[in-house]
Amino acid sequence: MKPLLLKQQDTDSLQNLGRASVQIVHDLKNQLNGLKLYATFLRKRMEKDLRAADEMETVNKLIAGLDRAASELSTIVQYGRPLELKKQPGVDVQKIMRAIAATFSEPAPAGGGSNGLTISQTDALPMAGDFDPTVLAEALQSISTAAVKMGRAEDRPVNVSLKRAIFESEKTAIIEWHGLKNLAPDPFSSFVGGDGIRMSLAAKVIEGHGGAAEHEEGILRVRLPISS
Image (tube, rainbow, N blue to C red):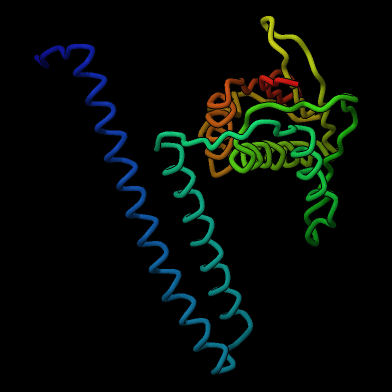
């Protein structure tokens, strides 16, 4: 019969397992980067030898796949490590979201459909608070990218609203992405695929700033505390 562990022992075991898992994932990422180096070298040799187009396409797909896998492993490593935030006063959430929306105004790749992200509603006042502008922007970019993919599945653009509210007696910025497909299971904790991992990391970043990431039918919502 397996002996019962004390609560602290159980917590320590989980923490040790988490640290070991992060190290394993980090090592796997390094191995993938090594494979990419060899594949890139092979591509250069093939370019000199003027190899057939289908052979070059195969190598390019291999390198792209290694890049995607390495990127997803990097996100897992980020999620597993303690969150380090370099907060700055007066960071305006509205400015961050406008900059993100501008990246989706560029034409989509051929056959990729509309990039479709528009800010349809904003508050007249700024939504400034103590945030890490780089880390928060990456989190909101991840959420926006996933939202656009969900909207694309419904063949319609995604509308973003930004508004101020009082939540639990505190000034709060509320960002909502509207017009999405069915959101079950919770996209902020599904860990399914690269987008799921990035969404989970984004939720961790939002929570690290004292906010919350939520969802309901057709809507993703982020709440962040603001000072002005």
